[in-house]
Image (cartoon, rainbow, N blue to C red; front, side, top):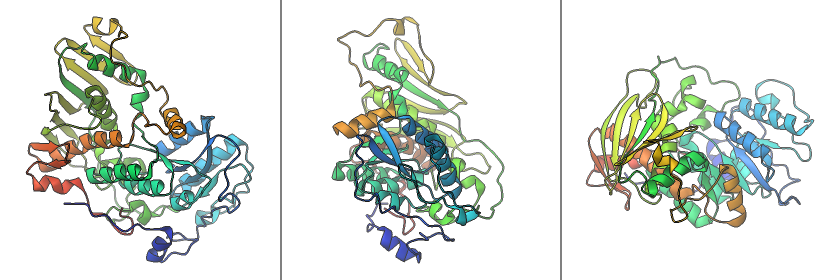
Length: 450
């Protein structure tokens, strides 16, 4: 199945197609979403980078707190299609900045906060209004995976630099589309694979790349599978949530509390389970250690299944991806969050707090000036900020993010096909397997398709 390029949907054509007014934005109620005309076209006198946040859920809020603490950044606007999230995060920012906002009292759609006092943060229910802001230099995006490609491309088309959460996209073809858009627009794109800014993972990769384990044999990614829980019935859409727009390019289904927010990760329509969630972080480190940021594995085989329950993504798996040099990368459904590099001389174990080797002498012998060293970043967000100013490639640029996501997608596609697969990382297709190639893309619902 090939991906077709859909005509670009502007805010005006989107509103026309949904029958919404410029104020309602396709919502069921009267939810105003204004662009404060006093700031359009103006550049703040400060040298801080002005940013907007799109997506304010669990991970989105973590990123809000990171950027708020960064003295190089100023948050000018936030956007979320869930009114409850929008108001809660906006109240946090107002409290932190001691802003006395004239909040509108009421319930449901009537309680969207009033426009921001000077120097504050503006709220939007539709992210496209945020992207229209000419004073905003860059955006931080943390929306569900099935919205990644659309939101990233819209932001890049709007001339914004982007910090985008992993996995880069829901499908392999969407990832290549985002890469092309970054190349076309010349914007700085950092993928939120922040383990590259962790010295423990950088050390592990440097020791592997400098041959301290001898010939590398296997890289084990140990992450839990999807939990098995009982289904819950569909329910009325919570007040303040635009469910149709939350679904966006995904198929239209009734609201179910398990399908939204954090647990959306365990449904194929919106994500790829633990393999694209936690697994993407470790897969990125494996790619880094192998020097494969512009390539990937060649063969995929193993085992994957989903036990009956509410969720769709794999509960149990042992999937093996083999690279051209013979190194095998495994995803194993073990209730941990660890990595193990295995070589002919020993092992290196690493996670987000511990690095150790067997034998211990491997890590006790320091690297020398003649050894290969990897780029140093101790703050992933700051690395993005520095690259916005220098226009250099960030540590996990868009091609790196795409290749890492591809590793995870390959593992998931194997589970769907249930037979060994051969991958061509240059042409980005499965070799002589039309059925597997159908999974390179998924149908996208209008008017949300890229």
